[in-house]
Image (cartoon, rainbow, N blue to C red; front, side):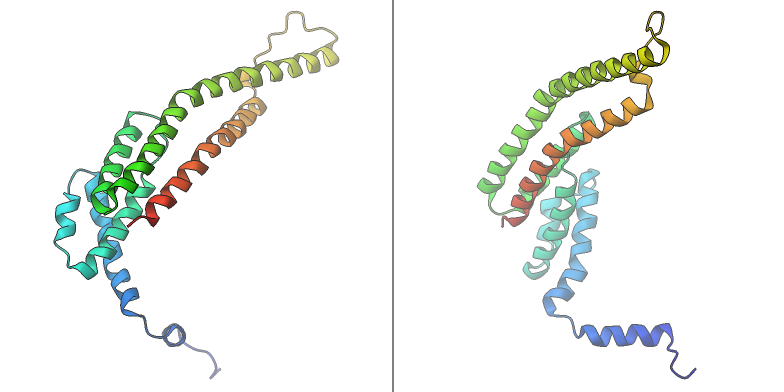
Length: 196
């Protein structure tokens, strides 16, 4: 029984194994959460991002900006409605305020706006076409199954849209179509993070 250790002893051993943190790690642990909170307040309209960043010294500002950028970048999403469009605009303005390479940021934002435009315009029409094609295909399969089972489809109303399997197939197709947009958006976000 003497070999059983308390949780505190185990935790102390783990800390010793990790070693001492570098100054950079300590600064990151201290200031990145400040930046995350600042970005959250900024997104709610409760903070002036650029002004509050200037209140930090040069060492800390880098980490506060990193935390804020992480939150702002995560808040850029495909424009599904007016709220997401507004949120994208605010997040993008915030990122532009943080970054020093304004031209690089604007180039990436230009590509993001093109992606959003394609998603809203062509993407929606592609989804409508895919929906109609899936519906027609599913209805044909249902008719064939009814024909095989009953010998006739006369008087049988076939409603593919209410069928759970149709709904599941549509959700799968929708996820697949949206994933293409999200993959490109993710690449753009990574490019943003790499900019100074």
